Length: 157
Image (cartoon, rainbow, N blue to C red; front, side, top):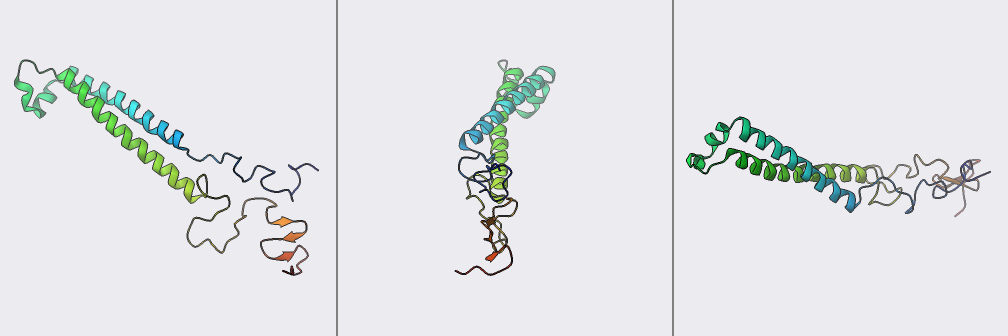
């Protein structure tokens, strides 16, 4: 019988828990990459939209900015600059919101950053911490969670 088919094998041997298994959590590198990717993508989109507004509807910026009456006013440059900067800030905020949502979701499920099998949600302390891990609560004929042998007899301390 191999570890994969043994119902009494430890969860770590089956890859269920432990520090060696990647539980799909959000590392600092992944979080940083999400924020930077959001900033770059939103900045590019904002720059494109601002450029298009400055090129196709230059009167839009003339209405909003009083300095637009001078001869050196270029609505395309203004639109591109505003689009890039506002898109950059929007991308950072959006990326941070995504990272926060993923981190909170992972924490609530007891994912990366928490201990394996730790119960994080309030009110669940009395539940079985091994739920969902097949065979984790029974070792060598003993029911470790309920303090009984598999035949129902009490385990002496």
